[in-house]
Length: 353
Image (cartoon, rainbow, N blue to C red):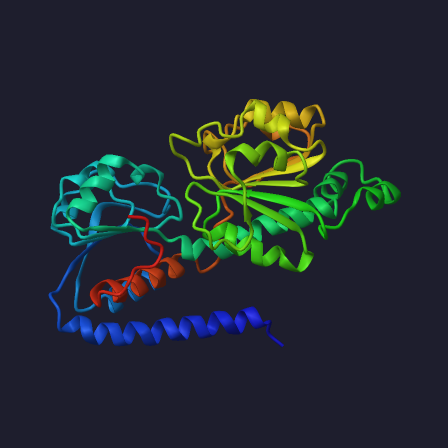
């Protein structure tokens, strides 16, 4: 029997399709729009996009990229567009008053998190949305997988398998632990953190969160900056989902890392620049931290001779937390859902500006 999550996903996709068909009928009656993209999509996703943007016009950047994390250089085709889907050049956006909506193919929006760009988009009532609704599930599952891996000593057993192939059963059993009842703090409380809270709920953990603007409807207790050190000192897991901006560079510096409970685990799926990596390495090598999982580093790709590759109990994945088999189709579906909303004056999903 398929899990309930599968059927929820299927119903979600069916409903999205029905909503889009309704929106498409209404859109025909409106002005045709020009949609620009720099996304180099696989054939099935590209065909799906082209067939479902009708009656609107789809144009491609002169330089497309298969990695959705890579921004496009200034592109002449963008000047013709009403809508941008992908990673347009942030400076060029400011110079194009006809551009009404930018939909990013990433969950983060660091290059666009600028006051001058915010002011320009607001002045012409334009919108900026992200694809965080595509990446909340895989990123949350990625963190949960690593939390469980550390709890069940999987990295250590894999290291044994590829080295001396010894059989330290008693030690591994003794060092294994349960997540049940443990404490975690999620720094940066957006869509990914919200979904991770749902995945962690069966373990009945004590969960805390931090975010730039507290809304008051968060499902877990938010921590004020003045309380952060106290919560770090009792947290078994510190999960960094912070975006990169002027306020988060080296957010986890030597002092904050030292404030974390001894023997805790540290995870980063936010951005590499939010962590002082030298201080993190020292915390791991000294045993202050029991382990770290890093999906984002600085720089990326991480050089092959970088010390983090050899750091004790540091597990690295190459910025893959958001990846899954149908990722590109998911991005297209998410954009088409928002396109239907845009053309029917319905509130956009994952809007940040």
